[in-house]
Image: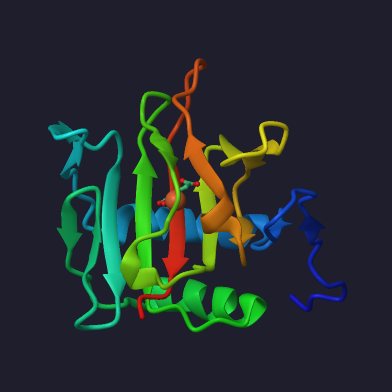
Length: 200
Ligand SMILES: O=C(O)CCC(=O)C(=O)O
Ligand SMILES: [Fe+2]
C-alpha cells in the first residue's frame, strides 16, 4: 500500500541525548508477518552471562546476526554473528534508511513471558565506538522500557514499546543514560526485540 503520510515521529523530551520514537514504523499486517517469521526462523539460544563475577543464565533468549568477522562481546560473553537472512535484511534496510545509518549487526532478544527481562545497562561496549547509535524494533507483546539519566535523577522516562514500533537511541543516549526491560507483574506473551548496532 502507498504511504501517503510520513510515519508519526515522537521526539522524547530528555536532556543530553536524542531519542526518537516511531510507534507505527511497521503496519499491523507487516508486523504480524515479521513476528511469525522471526519467531520461526531464528536459532534462539540461552547463554550464561557473568554479573559481579557470577555465572547466571540470561533471562531471555538471544541471537546475533551481522557482517562476517564482527563478533560482539558483552557481560563476559562473546557472540559470533549468523549471516543476514532475507527477513533481517528486509528490516535492516528500512531501519538503515530512516536512521541514516549502515548497521553492521543486530542483536535479537526473545522475551518469552513476563519473567524474562533485561537489566539496567548502556550499550557502550568498546567496539561500538564512543557515542553509539542504536535502533530498536519491537514485535509481539508490548513491554515497558525504562530510561534513566546517569546523574540527573529527574531525567527518566517509561515507554511502552508496542508491536511494530521503532525507538532510535541516538547521540548521547549510551553515554548519559541506562535502559532496561523490567520483569512484568502481569502475565505477558512473547515479545521480540531487535537492536541494530554498528561495530567499528
Ligand atoms: O528489549 C529491548 O527493548 C531492549 C534490548 C536491549 O536493550 C539490548 O539488547 O541491549
Ligand atoms: Fe540495550
